[in-house]
Length: 359
Image (tube, rainbow, N blue to C red; front, side, top):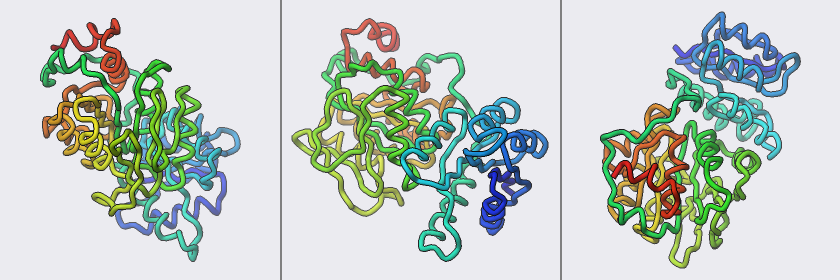
C-alpha cells in the first residue's frame, strides 16, 4: 500500500485529492495537512510513502516545508499545482530545488473534459515516486569515473564537437540545472534537451532553467538553426530531431513507448547527422528511453555519458544504457559539466584532470 500525506491549505482541495488518490486500490491517504508546519509534523509522525504538496499556504509555504521535511524525514514529494501559467510553473520548479521530486497538475473537477487524464497522471506520478525509496540530493563528495568505465582514445577527445544532446525524465529538472550551471557561459556548442514532463509545465521549466543557470534556454521551433551556447528543449507533443544542414525539425510521429517527445528520436537523429562530432548524455529517469540510441551514438563514434546510480534519482534510463555498454563514461551529476567542458574545449586545462587520467 502506498501511504500518502495530502498537503493543501484549502479543505475542498484536500478532500478532492484524497478522493482521487483513494480511488486507486494501491493508494491510501493516511492524513492531510493545511499548511507547511502541519506537513512537517505529520511527515515525522506518520512517515508517509509520498507527500503531495501545495506551494502557497499560510504559516509555512511549500518551499520551506519541503526543505524541512527533506532534513528531518526525507520523503518523495510531488508538487501539485493548480495553475499552469508560466509564473506558477516556474514557481513550482523552485520547490524542486528544495528537494521535491516531481511536479503534477491538479486535476479539474469531475465532469471537466481533462479531469480523467489529469487524475490518471496524478495517480501515476504518486505511484512512480513511491518507488524512489531514498530521496537523494546532490550534496555529496564528488566521485571520479568508476574503474569499469570503457576507455576512450585521446584522438576521440580531440574531435571537434558540434552538438550536445541530453535526455532526462524523473529527477531531470534538478539534474539539468546542475549540468547547465556547471558549464561556462561561453560554451561553444548548442545543447538539445528532451525532458519528460507533465503537459503545461514546459514553459515554467524553461523559464526556471534560464533564470537559475544564466543560459539562454528556449522551447525549440521547427526549422530553427541551433546556436552555440544556447539550450533548446523539445516542446510538448512533438518529437525533436536534427536534420541535415544543422536544422531542428519537430515531428508528430507516433509516440515511442508512449512518449512524445522521446529521447530515442533525438539521439537517433544526432547519431545520423553528427556521428563522432556529438556528445550524448542520458540522465536520471524511469524506463529505458534513449538507451538503445545512446549505444547507436557510441557506435557511430560519439562520446556518450550516463549519469551514475549514486547521483540518479531513478537509475532507469542511464542504468539501461550502462547494461548495453552504451556509455563511454559513467559520471556523477557534478562531474558531467566538467567533462563536457573538456570535450568541447580539448585544449582546456580540464582535459588532463577530467579525461587524460582515465585513458
